[in-house]
Image (tube, rainbow, N blue to C red; front, top):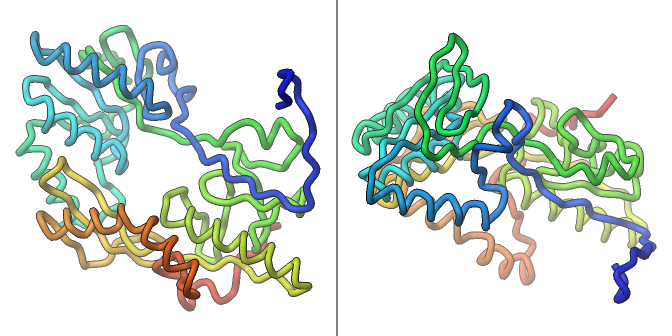
Length: 307
């Protein structure tokens, strides 16, 4: 945007598209009007102030979505607002992606913190002060937090770049846009696949994909051939309030292994991981340190080739 407030074009030879994603508030009627999301710090602040006001008189909180974000939100709210009744509503068992033992620790945390879990429940509408479920049941909710569903910003589609059904840029094996190869898409904004299947957006994949795009651009500038992106998952770190956590270690395709951490050891591990981007930035400036914990091993030696 120019100083006068008008738009102007900035030419480029290569562009890295890294606009991330956001919680999709258009999945179910009423979410945009009556639910909070964590898409915006100001909206989250308003939710925090509303819950603080309810502490004095009591109230109900509905957290919609049983993924990792929903689990962390429900336990954090329950721990910090013990006077409020917190209900977690999920279409599947919360933490379905974890192994049985790690999931049992999550359930124990719910019980300890007084979180009511409604699993296998389909939300049909968010109402003022309630959440409607299939079958006609309603769950009281003075505050509704929506954590289910993800979309990428509309900018790519509006710019004529090929995207998938969630608005993510369709990329080739090197993370270049299939329709505009001068554009690299990374993180949640890219529809990335490996030989073992699609990647879902997390910081685990965002940091390595960003580093890969930078490396590819540097190689192109040097007249070298770009390399395919290789990635595998390593863990699922989940906070359960401030004093508890669980770490599910996973295979390259994010399926659970037998190994997991819980309790204080998991809290220390997650704190280390959460602080790692700053440390990693210092390392990669000096040494050829890979920004990811796994490149998928043998499973990614033959990269997925888009159709």
